[in-house]
Amino acid sequence: MTKETDITTLQDKDSAKIFYSRYDPKEKLGSGGSASVHRCIEKETGEEYAVKIIDLNDEDNDAEDVCKEISNLRKVMGHPFIIELRDAFHSDQYYFLMFDICRNGDLDDYLSIKVTLSEKDTKFYMRQIFSALAFMHSKNIFHRDLKLENILLDKNFNVKITDFGFSEELKRGQKLYDFRGSFNYLAPETIKNQGADPPGCSIEADIWACGVIMYTMVTGFHPFWSRNQRTLQKNILRGLISFDCPGFPKISDELKDLIRRCLTIDPTKRITAIQALSHPFFKKSHQKYTLNPRKRFKIAITCVIALLKIKKLHFNTLPIRLSEVIEDPYRFRFFRKKIDACAFHIYGHWIKKEQGQNRTALFQTIPPKGYYEQLLFKQQYCI
Image 1 (cartoon, rainbow, N blue to C red):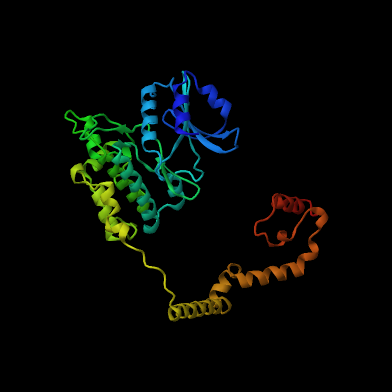
Image 2 (image 1 turned 90 degrees about the vertical axis):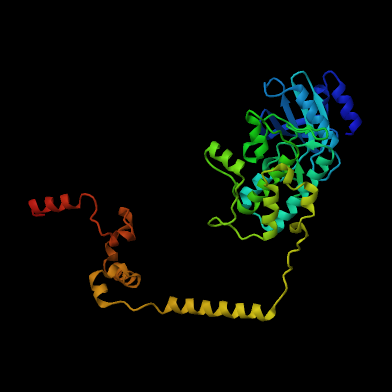
């Protein structure tokens, strides 16, 4: 599957037949918007791929937009942290885009398992994301829909940025004045495009999305999140973020500074992807663990002493007052076991297995059903 075969298949009037002759579609892996992603197997080699099926019958899909997505994907091919378009086919009703399969899901799924990521893991993923963005922006490609769900993880847990459905190739100084993207990740200038005097948005909006992603990674929640969309919009436009909320994890000043630089309201003052890669946060090396025998021995001794104290408390129980025993002896485990053992020793021969009775019948504090009726009957007839 080369670029040449991609071009020829797209030029065919109906290349969907070629798709079905080469590949065997399987179960659905996911869906988003008006497209679905399926696992498929190449019949000749048996290799697995992911196919994005775009339905042109859906009013949200347009053939020109799909061709634009394919064009932009081809322009960013070759980068290790961007999903690579392997092949493309189409018919009058569908487009089939072939990609490498990423079995470890997306960052959103990964974060839902981990809840929060350490600074070391955050650095690992954000360095790859900023590297991919720097490459994209050097090609004047504006992603426009960067979010956790659109960042896949390959078999080695490396990043693969995907879903270029909203992407645009910009000319020098060009801005877009429409309103597109996922609301939680929209930059203030994109939200203002809904107004009467839209300021326009450009590649700086991708950096804002990176700030939201970074904040979510280390905290587990959205920096501006609110149940009410209007409140969420106000929070984004204000750009006020806090690192001192109750339960907020302790993070370094370098990471806080990088997040603030990404979430700068003024897009002209916002950090770029290349500048982000040279930020002190990525240059900061995490201290390696050094073995301290004296400290480890001290911890071991403390643990042994603690275990001995717990064992002593277990065998040497606290004294019990006589008044408490007289009032309710059955609530103390030691006396309860002794009382039950004595009762069974004395009355155990009353239990008849053939009548379905069991050992617990001796220790029931509530009379069985019909007991009082039987007693009254016996008294009346002097049985």
